[in-house]
Amino acid sequence: RAKAAGGNRYEIADPESDERAITRHGLTTALPAALERGEFFIEYQPLVRLGDASVRGAEALVRWAHPQHGVIGPDRFIPLAERTGLIVPLGRWVLEQSARQAKVWLEALPPEERDTPLRVNVNLSPAQLHHPGLVADTVEILERIGLPAGALCLEVTESALIGADEDLLKPLRQLAEMGVHIALDDFGTGYSNLANLRRLPVGVLKLDRSFTQGMQQHPADPVDLKIVEGIVSLAHSLDLTVTVEGVETGAQADHLRRLGCDTAQGWYYARPGPPERLRELSLADAV
Ligand code: C2E
Ligand code: MG
Ligand code: MG
Ligand code: MG
Figure 1 (cartoon, rainbow, N blue to C red):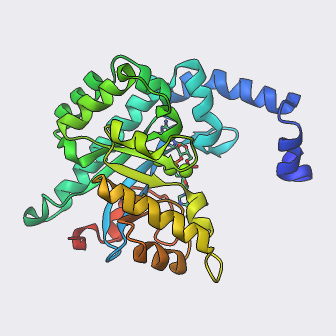
Figure 2: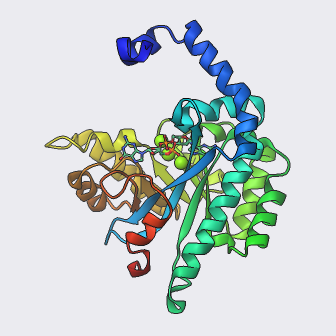
């Protein structure tokens, strides 16, 4: 009701309103049972190589099919799961489902294309990074499912790694040494200095959507173009690949391709959807 009447203004103007608080509380207490009852599901959004628009993999994005409220997006419940610690079993579930799905995709490729560098990207919360079982759980899941480490990419936000000490980086380093790819998500929204990148066991920069937004208008914002050009050249000089989020138009894709970005993700290519959709997007053609 509040939503229909006031839209976002209501929520922003009064984020601590009783109604929001009750909902938040209600959602928080419902989380553990939701996991047990299997109310979570995963949508996959293709990651596309900018050069030829071939599908290189997909990002796993979790959703909650709430019996009363309908489908709830992760921005609303991940922070709650994070605070209560449920993110650890929930994140493990997402990782396991995604690894199984990646295995299905890989096996669907014709034998001569099995070593196609196809990946599933899975988001990691700060609480998962701090959890001592991260490396062991990940290894166990990959081995049990028989998924090569190189088919997994873990996404960690830039803000989660700001000021990270060696203790926090160690599990990521171990995973990277095993061949798991590590991506720095929402890059450009935090405050990390670029030189800091050298210290992180990261192979992929995911440029935040805010950078691609300035390329939507005609002509594109020249400052945005310069900034992205600079980030790409720095990233490439450090042997990092660059993925861009939130590509919504062909014009953006053209700019980003010209600026040397490697892969892209966004509504222009495909919205997040069920795993079968990735096959329809002719994964098998993608070589
Ligand atoms: P993210 O990792 O940065 O994921 C990208 C978000 O951008 C997704 O929102 C995706 O649906 C959305 N998006 C993709 N293409 C476009 C586009 O062209 N335009 C616009 N406007 N948006 C686009 P979503 O699915 O709502 O997920 C939000 C965030 O929730 C994710 O941001 C990620 O931080 C978190 N999240 C999702 N799944 C998980 C999970 O399994 N575990 C954890 N820890 N976090 C998750
Ligand atoms: Mg992500
Ligand atoms: Mg992101
Ligand atoms: Mg983002």
